[in-house]
Image (cartoon, rainbow, N blue to C red; front, side, top):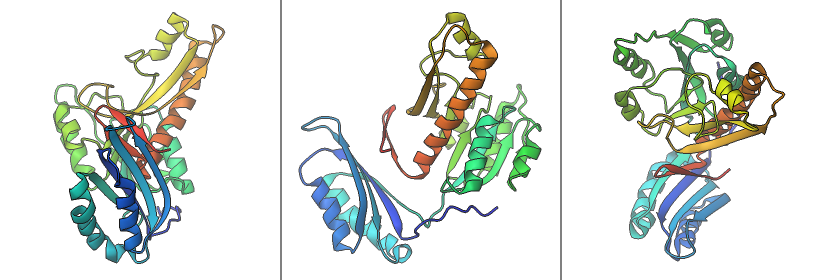
Length: 291
């Protein structure tokens, strides 16, 4: 499938993290101006008025970017990043990110991603979908995307995760669209910072396989969903996006579940899009999101 997302191949994004000090904005913007770039947008955040940590996202246009990227990166590293002790990342539109999706039996989150991809609203290439069940093969292949069934044996999960790593090589991001398996530490380390999960509650909240029954039993007034990066701590990774909806005692468990699925779809899709558009900077166990 060819994604219909139309982008400017001469558009790029620069993410900056460093200790806040005077002159950073001038140094970055002046560097881009000196190299003929036009700044399209600039967002920034500092944790404190003086001496805090500084974050910046700059989107800019530069003609013939593909041929200039290497020189631009080398010069920025030497003339700006080194003097200001900046951690940085440069991402260009012409380098299309590749995404793999993992799913089990529930299809709502996966179908939302595939639908948005088919509409051209996710700037990426979804390469394949891997599942530990065969149930969703037809739904995936209808979009012209490869479906791979990799069963997970509870007595030898590591071999399944090794196989997933093998078939997903070359992808820039993995999305757990209700993949109902606990990933191994080895797998998480291999894909560190490159896995987004959708959790079926407003973290920190109800854990386990049936959160909506727990919510019903507790008589909650809000239900929600959380998209986060996966770490070795189960459901404790940096939070990217959350969503909630008010409910009441009148809602049944199936109704709560359906509302929850709607929230999960939207929250996961936003988190994935923000990652693809380089709007997220991870800071310890938190994120700065320039949305």
